[in-house]
Image 1: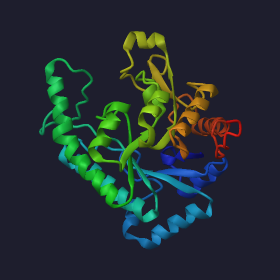
Image 2: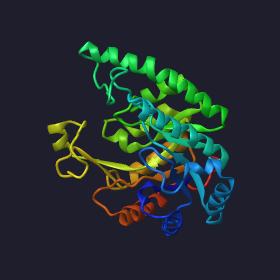
Image 3: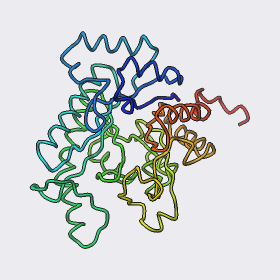
Length: 319
């Protein structure tokens, strides 16, 4: 396994500055944003049409002993507003093409969430089956909107030798292992999961059980933790819409790894990943509002270096 980092948090730095920072932490691979919600501070889609810029970019990565674990363009490819939706789709398609040219095997996105009609202005995330309007809406969202698009996206990725790793996230159609496997059944095996345990924790989903359910559908993994406060959960539930900066009143907040769950849990996490055949990158995603970027990253990296399984397992000599 390798330690990586999602560089979106360094949006104010150049790629050269980012490389300097992460080399201090003994991080060997980077996940780079190409647009959508993460932006594109370190990897421009314009490189598609500029072979010289592409070669210079690849040389900079390799000369510093780094690799690229994924290109990320998290967006809403099912957004109800056509011009917004088409921009997100276009970014995903171009990111797949750039990944192909760079030899990067994985692109990360969200599944998307439609509205409640073709005339809607905002996404509409269904969270319960009743009143029956919600069941009818959810059926329409999956069958009329998600299915045709993701069939095409799955084929496009497959034709270009790239995998799309969907990050399960509340607010979108794919937010759980069950919905992840549903979109994979629709789109085919070129579509899988970017597993982020932090999003499962606050929904009450055991990430270790999720790993076993998803198995070889796991394409990429984020390293991010979550801390929950039962007292606030009893008051507001886990679907907490208070600002992330209102930490004391929220039901849960994102934390650097080790600050929501200890080493024993993370040891089980990497072990379960290896059991199902995942032996690749853990990409640190820093969204801890109680820590600075520098402190959060250094603590996360130090913690994970002690957790990662970096060598191949030996044959069981005792069996």
